Image (cartoon, rainbow, N blue to C red):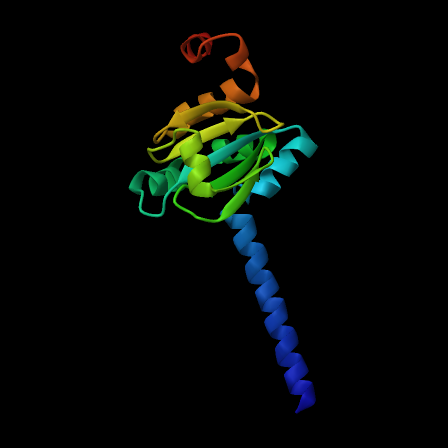
Length: 166
């Protein structure tokens, strides 16, 4: 009886392991989303810029951004390589720390003037604001935005000039 239980447990463990491994290998790479505090700390440590997906639960375009843009293979690879990605619910009362101040995620969003969703906030490696990209972005446009910010083109030319040079 005990041997049968051990055997069943071993078979289940092996099957679960095989199912997990196959779903990982077939599902492809995904964006590694972090909590706010963890993301800010990791950006400072790794010297990567921060991208914050500011969303709400009811926002249809936010769901489309997740399903299309943030699921795009090129976007995923670029984001994971050059950014620390953070998801932030703009209606959450959960507290975060930003620049030594405790505030809700809702207060943080309001402080940046974010009132439309989705909005994408870009921060430097030390948490200073770079820019906000308001609204939904198609994957090809978003890849250009990601490159423009990650490669510091925003410090010397306009986004339109950057796109023309492409």
